[in-house]
View 1 (cartoon, rainbow, N blue to C red):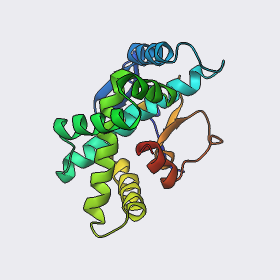
View 2 (view 1 turned 135 degrees about the horizontal axis):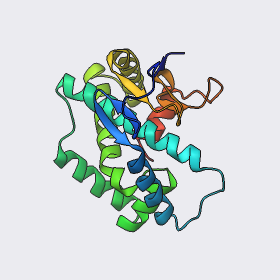
View 3 (view 1 turned 60 degrees about the vertical axis):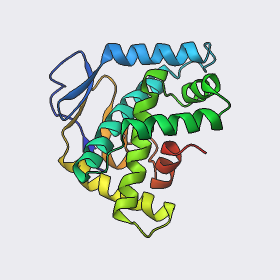
View 4 (view 1 turned 90 degrees about the horizontal axis):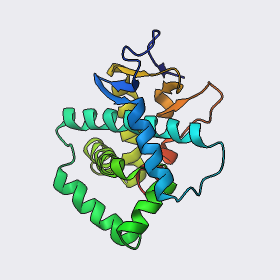
Length: 193
């Protein structure tokens, strides 16, 4: 299992995570958490706070990692791509309000929806670039394999208060016993039905 975190704590104590110098602050994570709670009208099981915070930090790190890789490959999503995909999702989910609620139910705050969509598009673009004749499953597998290697070169730090980022799990975990995510689960997380 490949674990990425600084042996020392993140240099900025107010940072929840830093990826290649770009940080997300603890206060931003708190604001995103509040957005989710507001959009769910408080309809969340008690004790899921820490899980949501880990999901938010994992999403930030994953977005930065995938965006850096797609940019380096010259296939990064454009703003037009993101907005077109968002309109499609809103239509699929029955409108903007329903889409925002669905996003919140999946620990995606409204302020991070565009970043999440960018991650999805970039992930798909990486897979298509690496396996142009492949099917979606083989393209997803190619993207995951590439990101696992690419991620070894990326400086990722997570505030130990929130856990440790584990590259081969594409997420922040408390300990080595947290569940492992497979490429198929990652694909499902990035590509809503």
